Length: 395
Image (cartoon, rainbow, N blue to C red):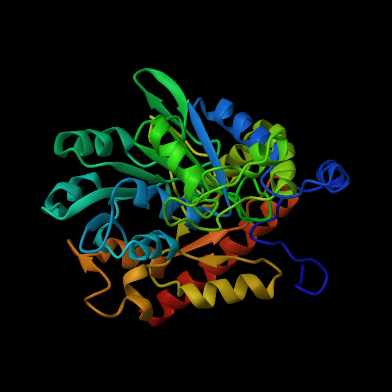
């Protein structure tokens, strides 16, 4: 199999005539931004995760910004988080004028190590921003306990975690049901549910939700839907600084169709992840769910064996028509964070760096066939096997 005749992508959204028809419905309605479809999408998402409030926004980065802002994060403050995440996690902190304080990831996974959080807290700490990396829930129970002990809000970067679950007081609950203070989701095309782009905030705090809705629309005190539906002339005012963080009705209509697919999408992704685990046993260091977590398997990330160069392995797979991505980035290694004024490391970040340099993300998407998965497995075995031979000869 070559790249010329078949390409296996690392991710692929599910979109068909159902989404096309949903967008057509919106276009014909004449209301194309933050209208009835957005309101319906918010209700349906809130029902899915059992959250009292869900507010749709333009993307997860804007969701993180609003979450930090409502938690009171501002200039001179600190937010404890991980470097081992997409750069938006830290960027949102800096949008507030605050400093990201990085701690390392856990020894056996890609999420924040709860053992390192307390030592990173200072008098300036205004929030803990944990990430459910690659769809795998982090140890939220321990993190929430720390937040409560120190009266520090816990914000969940759940960009990858739509549909993931956690065992909470003996009951399986969706990420997004208020465990921390706020959870933020992404609907980017690489995520399990997509609206093209888009985001959502969930919370149990009605005042937080009110603020999100005010700020996402320029700080306008009267929404478009209320003004257009009024039988009397209404003049809006702008009592405080806001942003243009709105979701369109076209996006929301697509999202509503995507939510209908979610159970079957996750079932298939979990099946594929199980196949990877079975067939790569003994060749790779593979991800594993703790007994209190159920991942949506937004991505399947493996650690390469010693002696197997990451870039060379990825190129060898690409030459066979298989797309991969390197392990999750480390924000502190990027030029935008080179200045000590931009971030602070509260622990060594050795595990984070090792994960970026030794891990690769394999193709996984709901439409992936068993045959395509086995093509990836066989190619990865071959690449690993060749590396072992070269390593043995060199020895």
